[in-house]
Length: 153
View 1 (cartoon, one colour):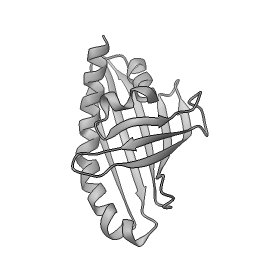
View 2 (cartoon, one colour):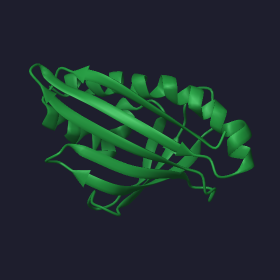
View 3 (cartoon, one colour):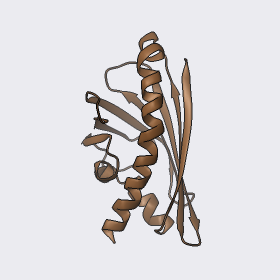
């Protein structure tokens, strides 16, 4: 396996602007994404080229550090794109795209991931495992996002 792709969509009963603001609030990532233990480093401003570092700890897995870099952030279009790499220097990476669209009763959030597995260990072991995990984790994160927004009301 050289890579894999996936997506998940959810409706959130909150204004699209509030949803986008939460998705792009790095300090609040651990509040709604159970796979993120903490934000270890964050930029002063979330803009093109900005980087941040999180400690990942999905259920039943060891922890690891993950570094992300913004490729595009557009509040007007409510689109957020970034690349994530394991902080251990492995060249494998994932591209994430978050899109938020207003609806009559709130917003629709869609997240796409494109994972590129560049080394044999990621292709044979970590990649297939992570593929199965993300299929569960991302929809759960969207539920967590909705719950966090409801709590903040």
